Length: 456
Image (cartoon, rainbow, N blue to C red; front, side, top):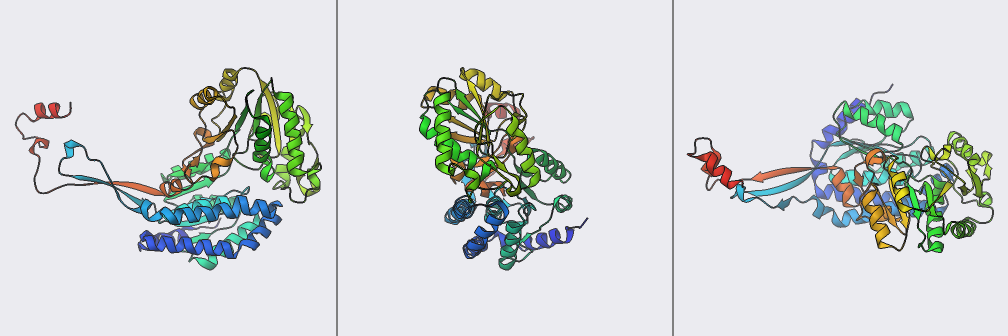
């Protein structure tokens, strides 16, 4: 197994030159990254097409464009974020001033997944650069064209002692995790997240884990059915369902179930055509192993929409399953594919209890016009983040930190959240020397009596 100790030490030595702590250095690095992405835009689109059959629209809107916007937003606010900020000082500390200094951790490791291989690698990298860190980026081996292109673009624009890309499989990740990093950022599955956390614990390295889980979507009886169907189909079937925050399963109120399903069927045809498998822009499943796992779910319940597949192209058409129960295999783990199981309900309290029996989801989506129902779900269900009357869209706001809770992840990023994730907040008290408060010292007469009065 290859060792990356020398690389990590090289980055640590560079970090200790303090160059990355200069705001001008960080701004220049982000400008360079933006220019590299724009120059390599067409190559990125082509590599995403080869790896996942992403259309040019999907490649730009969900991968390239969202990253460029993240850079723009970060550049606009970075100088303000990085400034030491003064905070209040209690009366017990009279004469002193209190400050918080954001400082970089040092050498960071970013392990990225395959489903959005460019966006989910570069978005955390933006935060690492903005906060003043060095970074080792490990992209997914399941999307080799995109990973290789990222390695090429970053190598051409940054010295390896500042930013470097290490390509490879599981053995590469294992070798990297043996090294002592100052921060680890991982996006991927829950089982691998546990391995990352265990490895990090050996060096007491702080981590952000962006994981997943079964994200519920609830359609209440007063929902706008047409809009709900369209936004759910969009959120679920983009990237062939290979999205960590895609609606994983659907609870539909029994009073509107038939009408909703009919509208959902029409919407799928509207978005992807009557024969989605013939749609040359429909994303494929990343590997044969993932394809076979997903295809096995097509036997669960009753196929209401879709159900077709092309094994030789690793494509599964948008599929809606009805007559589903929690005993079905499709309801055991996160689906991560274009298959949407539908369950019906009558009582909102019962499905809230059902959701709470399972691990806390990364996302939750609720379609209702009722403020009372919205309040009930938001107060009673713990989840990473989500939307009322929409799906997935919350991830695109730089003002909403994105992350999980419990087994769906720990930590958050995007916008200032990315800067905060890759920064340690160092608290500093600046004390006056013009006078001293004798009460603090043990030889002060009747000191305890006065301290008790003071702290009441």
